[in-house]
Amino acid sequence: MEVLNHWEYWMLLGFMGLGTLLMLTASLGVLRMTNALARMHAAGLGSSLGILLLLLATGYYFQFMGNHEKGSLLLMVALGFLLLVTNPIATTAMSRAVMRSSPDNDRQYLALDEYAVGKRLTVPVPSEPNTMIYVDRRGWDSSKWETYDRDVIPLWVADMDFRSPDPIIKALQVRAAHGIFGYGATEEAVGEWFCTHLLERYDWHVTPDQLVFLPGLVSGLNLVVRAIGRPGSGVMTHEPVYPPFLVAPGLQDRKLQSVPMPHDHNGGLLHFRLDMERFRAVADDSTALFLLCNPHNPTGRSLARHELLELAEFCLNRSIVICSDEIHCDLMHEGRRHLPIASLEPEIADSTITLMAPSKTYNMPGLGCSVAVVPNPALRTLVQQAAMGIVPHVNVMGYAAALAAYSHADCRTWLEELLRTLTANRDYMEQALLAAFPGVRTTRPEGTYLSWVDFGAVVENPYRFFLNHARVALSEGSRYHTTGGHTWARINLGTSQSLLEEAVARMQAAVAQHQGS
Amino acid sequence: METVYAPFQTGVQLCLLIIAVSMVLTVIRLVRGPETPDRTVSFDLLAVQAVAAVLVVSVLLGRSDIYDVAIVTAVLGFLGTVLLSRFLEGDG
Ligand SMILES: Cc1ncc(COP(=O)(O)O)c(C=O)c1O
Picture 1 (cartoon, rainbow over the protein chains, first blue to last red):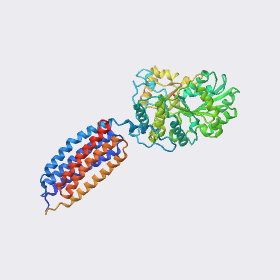
Picture 2 (cartoon, rainbow over the protein chains, first blue to last red):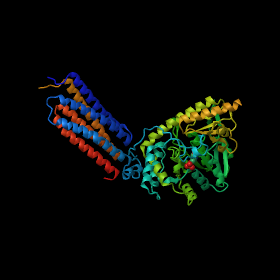
Picture 3 (spheres, rainbow over the protein chains, first blue to last red):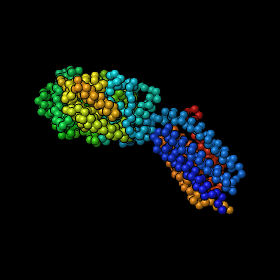
Picture 4 (tube, protein in one colour):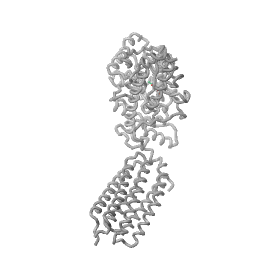
């Protein structure tokens, strides 16, 4: 004979089922949440409600079963009471502990012991899911955001408004918590990892002894200009180009030989290329160095193999050393592969100095960690001599961040997500510009998060016009040219799409008002 | 002698299965960590789930005399969690 009615059995079953399912959700939460704090919340909620339901069901069940042991009801009440009291205490203790975990344990995040090639670090870092996190940087020590008035949308200097990948942040936190900032010893480890990175991503074999670490690429550029040739030597480059390319030769007592990059256009879309004819015409016996920017700031061009080979042949024939600034190398759209010019042939590598950095890729240019790859020992000595006594070592935080950037697998995933975001921003901006400003022409960058736009059809000086009338700060086109270039502007796409939308709306309104008056 | 409604018995067995699966999942996080706080959280959850398992088993067997097992489990779980947390904070 059954003691309980069927509906009672079903009710009990309902309670127990719900209770156990809550236990399951708690476990799933603990498994799937990305950091200890979130795991704790998931576990707490499911487990306390779950255990309560189970207690109620069990209590009811035995209350009406004939074989109820004496005293067990008391035990059950005691158990319920115990759980209700201990659970919050345990949770409080846990949350305090979760907030403060031991620094010795954290040393693993610095990847100091794992630098042998092939041992990619797999210490999982408690991290957010890999979406780009836009950060409001106002008031946070940002040149981009503090140079102009607070109401200006800054789309100029090349850094992004996205948080760096978590492993980098964690590494810096751990390094800072160590509390000692003496002279560092991570250069070797960073070098090993950087070479692994070059091999994996560009199929380029480089050994750590061929690297010269530098606190910045602009100083690298100037060092190379100073190291190669002699006062008065010609330094050739292409324009438009990142302004320090045009300035460095003068600063280092060299003669600038800048050749314009011709462009074709297809509707409103621009395509820039190198003008080999003009290079040949302009080069003379004094020409000692070619400053190449690839991927190209500001046009976003990523040079194809045949273009690079043609340029290399020209330089090698004339014994011109190539300095290739490839700082944007990891920021390629639509899976395009960056080709380091030095990786194409050993002879090219032999007369090339390649400048690279994790700074643009992982949005850490303020940390000052860059590297020159100089396979030719004679050239390397020249660069090292030019730097001697003047150029400081990379700082310990820069190295810690670089080490995390190249050794943590999570940074790769972050980068893929970043690239998807940047490509979406690029496509948005192209479409928005062409729709909003008839006659305006823009590049479709193959690499970099920079658009290069000719606003000549709507305003004469877009930099000044948009700053004054739309409160949007672009980079000034004339700075990328030796002469002229006023109708051009560079737009930084490394921010949230909504900010870009707002900028375009303001710019469009300003132009409409301007044309109406 | 009383009998138990058969679907109920099956249902309770299913509950036990779900709890067992949950415990396995919790153990995965316990093993993986990566940090001691993650393990502490998993340990605490595992302790509560153990109590839950004892409760379900008691219904399944029709034996309410095994509650003391549940109580001991709960007490041990609580003490373990608090001790681990204290240890993590570095003052215990
Ligand atoms: C082509 C190029 N080189 C160098 C730099 C700056 O490098 P750094 O900040 O390391 O001097 C930039 C930054 O915008 C750049 O676009």
